[in-house]
Image (cartoon, rainbow, N blue to C red; front, side, top):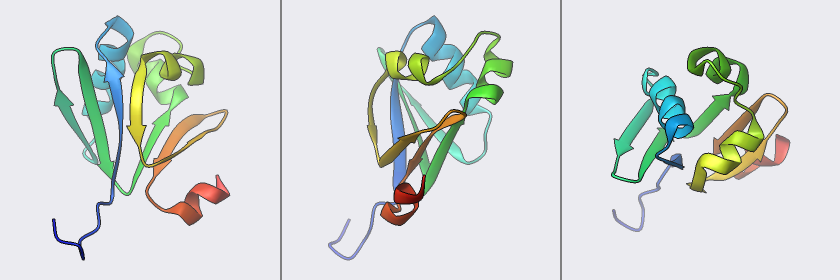
Amino acid sequence: MSADDTFDHVGITIARSVEGDAIVDALSDRDDIEVYEHASYCEVRARDRLRLDFDELTEECGFPVDGSLIQVVMSTYYGRIAMTDDAVILTHDVHEAAEL
């Protein structure tokens, strides 16, 4: 990557566990998301913006998914992160992050 290139991906690293694997499986069906699996964690990333919608994940996983659970299974993230009542949102745009 040259000095003129920008890195516009955002992502979250999710620890491998029953809950973490279920969340990653639910997210991996989306076309806008890339999943990289490792022995003890999975990296979930997207270009520009990543939204982890709690209702959608709860429905797909079969157990309640909320901000508390995401904080437990998340080991790190990159991008600007915001937690709302409905979702965890990661964005690379500092102006969008300020509005969340």
